[in-house]
Image 1 (spheres, rainbow, N blue to C red):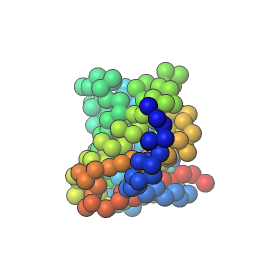
Image 2 (cartoon, protein in one colour):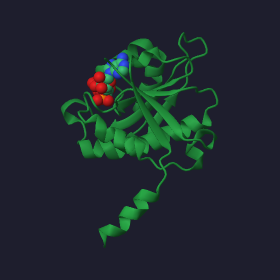
Image 3 (cartoon, rainbow, N blue to C red):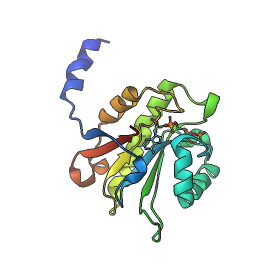
Image 4 (cartoon, rainbow, N blue to C red):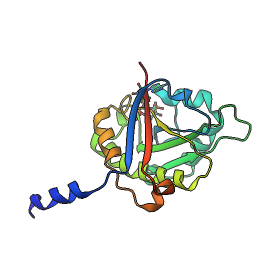
Length: 183
Ligand SMILES: Nc1ncnc2c1ncn2[C@@H]1O[C@H](COP(=O)(O)OP(=O)(O)OC[C@H]2O[C@H](OP(=O)(O)O)[C@H](O)[C@@H]2O)[C@@H](O)[C@H]1O
């Protein structure tokens, strides 16, 4: 195998995910935004930004938790769950869960496994988002960069490098993801 063969092919690929970064609270997103965060597959939003999700969106937590309970962790990692807001929800935020590690805490997956799962989970989530009519902006925290301990630049590279096909692109246009992080 000649590694040189892979270089020109990579260069010809078109990026179709645009990541922009801004300082701010993820939860201040406008109505109809989807808010994306990284999740374990065991049904816990017990710490980090996940705890903020649990406090603000208890109904979404119940959906996430039951989804985990009826699935095998091994099958969930690398997938995603898009949870629509209830009609009477105050903020009308969708919650986008990307299952990037099977376990959490000291049993979390290795950075390489987390990055691999991030690639397929983001692809899965964007497919769901493309099929959903009511979504405005796509917002995300610096996923994996806190408790999952993966450098943000590594995760960002994976997301920006996603090669999406038509069914994953809403209206055939590049996907814009706004990443919010605290000051
Ligand atoms: N309001 C806000 N607005 C914008 N950005 C905010 C913010 N608040 C915090 N951040 C940043 O958001 C990034 C992610 O940091 P996190 O440590 O939360 O998540 P992670 O993706 O590394 O790991 C996931 C596991 O953590 C949880 O904990 P449990 O497993 O339940 O115990 C889950 O359930 C998973 O399993 C860091 O850059 C924080 O600065």
